Length: 331
Ligand SMILES: [Fe+2]
Image 1: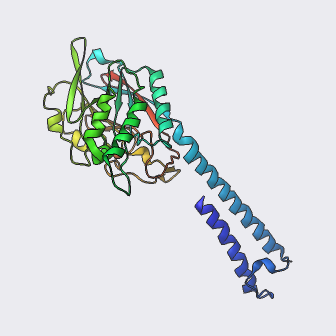
Image 2 (image 1 turned 120 degrees about the vertical axis):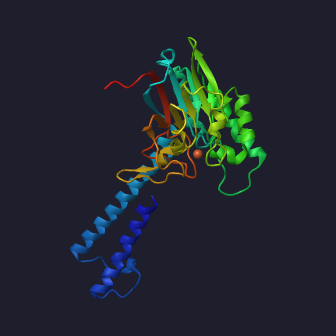
Image 3 (image 1 turned 90 degrees about the horizontal axis):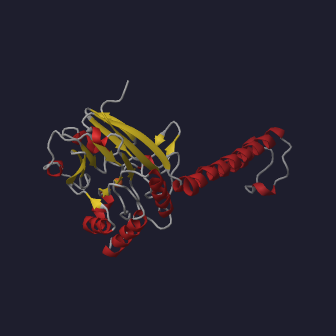
């Protein structure tokens, strides 16, 4: 909207200058007092500029309305079928809902989180995983224990409605770690979620095992893969929750089969032909979607909430439904 209004003003300024340069007797700097111009070319220019200015302003307003009011509130369902060579047959067709980057805010993110919870429950998944950034660190102002607890509790209160047959698991993000990892983690645990902080748990089906692991935040220097995988037999498959997707370049050196990440927000605002306006550190290489990095499969979810500006454009909030498949993708 800012660009459109600015362009309109520039158009008017050019008109005044042109009349002076043509030397046709207009010496006043006040354009409003002059007589109507007899010059049809000039009249056409004014009309065209006004039209273009109004058109640009209207277009910008429409985009702003869509970006701020509509798109951020309507999650998109993304279905992914992911083949893992080491997945035991007992876990074939297991479904996982992934939600990420909630950045709880009563005005801008509560509604899309509620919508995502409803959408997830309709999918009736086996597992639900939450890949971090439940709260937001402020740009300015102090952080108090009270506002961390409030944000985390409000976010957990909405997420508490999630249902998954085999449990709901979470890993913390950079904002959670920066604010107060212990407080956020405690609140999520009280809500019934299992927080995986440099740890792994085994899921069992028909005597076979799949490990679900989670690291603490990479950007805060808290992730410890060695510690996380310490009790996991090297031959057994692992699904890892790690907030930052670009951590995959490290994870690929470990016996991990699938990494689920968020953090990027997909850029939040994605311009046609330009792409994401901004990608955070550790989400620049693998900003969204499915990636194969050596033997490791990575999926980056673009998140639900927003940060810094309450807008998403060309990048709606996402609910991912992953169906695990044993073996190699046909073809
Ligand atoms: Fe993040």
